[in-house]
Image 1 (cartoon, rainbow, N blue to C red):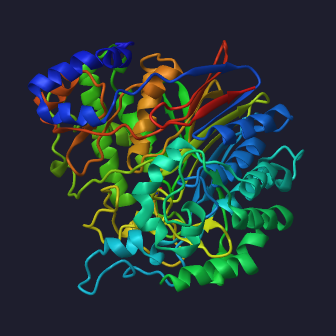
Image 2: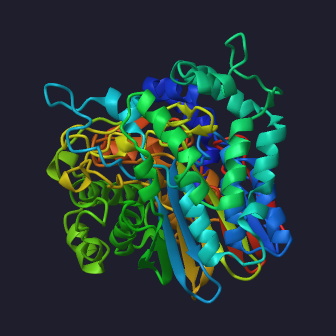
Image 3: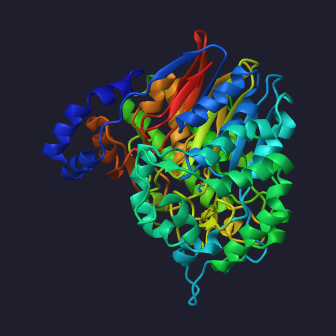
Amino acid sequence: MRNIRTARAHRFCAFALACTLLWPILARAQESNPEIPPAQAVLAHNGMVVAQEARAARIGADILQKGGNAVDAAVAVGFAMAVTYPRAGNIGGGGFMLIHLANGDDSSIDYRETAPARINAKSFLDAQGNADPQKSRDSALAIGVPGTVAGLALAEERYGSGHFTLAELMAPAIAMARDGITFGDDRAEALPNERLRLARWPATRKIFFKSDGSPLSPGDRFVQSDLADTLEVIAREGPVGFYEGTIADEIAAAVQAAGGVMTAEDLHDYRAIERKPVRGTYRGYDIVSMPPPSSGGVELIEMLNILEGYELATADPAEELHLLVEAMKRAYADRTLFLGDPDKVQNPVERLTSKDYAALWRATINLARATPAGAIRAGGQAQDEGRNTTHFSVVDHFGNAVANTYTLNFSYGVGLVAEGTGVLLNNELDDFAAKPESPNAYGLLGAEANEPAPGKRPLSSMTPTIVLKDGKPFLITGSPGGSRIITTVLQIVVDVIDRGMDIASAVSAPRIHNQWMPDQVYAEPGLAPELIDALQARGDTVVPTRPFTSANSIMITPKGIIGAADPRTRGGLAAGQ
Ligand code: GLY
C-alpha cells in the first residue's frame, strides 16, 4: 500500500503497453502526456522556498538568508514572480496567503479580486439571458479589481519581521523588470498559443512580442520598463501608489477603453482582508487552509473528514482510490450549492467541515459501486486549465510557514496590459457562476451564493494549506490547476499521512480528479492500469488527462526541511538555506 504510487510510476511502461493493446483512448493520451519525472528532494536546515520560477525562489531564499522571516520571503517572491512568471505571477490579479506563525497563531490574507461596482448578476449574460463565456473570459468585463499589491503589503505589514521595508523586498523584482531577464524556454513555449489573446492589445504586444510580431523566444531579453516604474511607485508609496493616483487612473482607463467597467473608485475601494483560516483535523494532524471566498479549505477538510472514516493505510489500493473519488464527488457538489463570498452570502463552513456531516456523506458511499454524479446533484462540462495559477511554499528557521497561491485566472489573464503601467490584468470574474446551470471555464457550476454582484469576490479553488503535527508546521502545500487544485492538495495530504510517502514522491505521484460534474474521473499518466480497471468496474468513467497541476511543497522531517518542486511544470526550484 505504502509504495503504491511509486509502483504506479514504475509500472508506467507496462501500463503504456497494456493501454496500447487494450485501451486505445488512454494509449493516445499517453503519447501526448509523457511520464511525470520524479521530483528532486532538496534538504536544508535553515529555511526553504519552493516556487515555480527559479529566480524568484532564490530571491526568497536570499531574504531568509539575510534574516528575513517566511512572510518577508513570500512577499519578495510574490513581487518577483510578477516579473519573472507573467503567466500567473502578478500584480494585476489576486490570491490567498496562508500564514502559520512560530507562536502557534494562524492567519490568512484574502487578496482575491473584487467585481467592479458596475458588475451585476446579468453582466455575463447575452441578450437571450444565457451565459456568455466570451464576456466572462475574453473581454475586459471579466477583469476583477486586482488584489495582489494590497495583499502582499498587508501580509508584510502585519507579519513581516520588520527588518525589511517593502522597497527592500521589491528591489530584486524592480531590477529584473528594469534590466530585463533572459526569456526562459517554458515561458517562450507558451506564448505562441497565447498570441491571439495577447497580441490584439498594443500595450501587451509591445512587451511580449518583437517588432516583427513574433513572440519572444528562449534567450531573448525580456524587459518590462513600465512595470519597473509601477513597482517603484509601490515601493516608494506603498499600496496607495497603486490603488490611487496615476496608476489607478491608467488601469481604469485601459479597462474602460477595452470595454470594461472598472473605475478608479473601484481600485480606491479595494481592500485585502485578513481572515481566520478554516481548520480541521485528520488522523491527529491539524489541517489549516484557506476559507471562503476560496472553496479550497472547506472542501479539503470535508473530503479528509469523509476519508478519515476508512482505514486507507491498509485498504486495498483500488478501494482506496474509489473512496477518494467518492469523497471528491460529494465535496464538489456541496461547493456548487453552498459557497460564495463570505462578505455577501452565508457559507455553512462549520457544518460542511464537521465530522458529523462527513459521517452523513459516508453513509451514502457504496464500497462496491460508484455513485453516479446525477444521484448527488445536477451538472455541466469540464475544461482544461493550463498552468495559469502558481503556488509557492516557504518556511523559515524561526518556525513560521507560508503557503501562497495567486493567479490571473487564465494564463496571462485576459491578456490586456494596462497602457503605461506594465500591469497584466486578470479575467478572474469567470470564477463567478454567470448562471447556475452554466459551468465556468473549469466546468464548475455554482448557485446564487456565487452569482456576480458589485464588490463581490468570485469563489476560488485555491487551496494554500499548512498541515501541523503537534502544533508545528509539518507540510506546506498548494497548487495551480483550477478545479483540480483541491483534489491535488487532498492527494498530497493522503499520500504523506496515509501512505507515509516522502514529499518528493507525493509531489510526483500520478493524480486523479473528480469534480462531481461532469461525472468523470480524470487520470494522469502513470496510474496503474489495474486501478483504472477497478474504478471502471465500479461504474466510474475514467478519462486520461494531462499532468498540469504543480504542487510545490515542503515537508519538515527529523532530518531537516525537505522541499520538492513539482516536475510537471519546468522551471520550478526548491531553494534551501
Ligand atoms: N481562478 C481559479 C481559482 O481561483 O480557482
